[in-house]
Length: 139
Figure 1 (cartoon, rainbow, N blue to C red):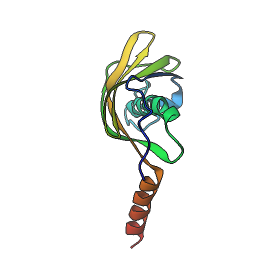
Figure 2: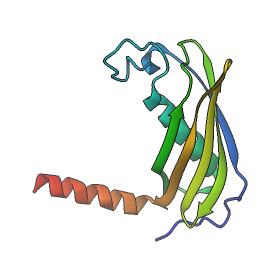
Figure 3: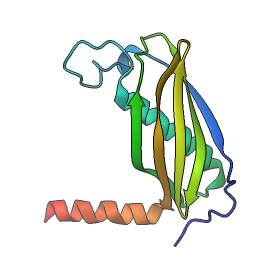
Figure 4: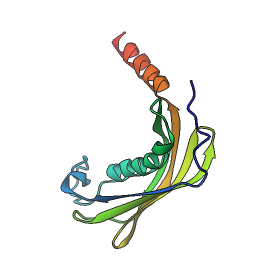
């Protein structure tokens, strides 16, 4: 089974907005030094959310969006209480893979930028790979 991708436009742009909380700081996500600003793993998650939300309206329930590759430059600290805007712009598409340029900004300017490659795959294919790993672990 494959996912129907022909209805996905070649020009996609999507923006999400998030507020930085204590639970999103580098300290909260495991940095052993006292870094009370937005953690890079949270930024990465937001990159994936922005790209996935751009694609999701064009997919049926039998398909899922997964991250395949990322380059992330966290360029400026964002303190707790700041709002962050993350914008994903589709740059290229090769089959089921989508390349996104993504920028995160706060009220003081750019906080991060990078490139994300996401793939659209059949949910059953993902579930099959999960089962294979689980079975291999229990053998």
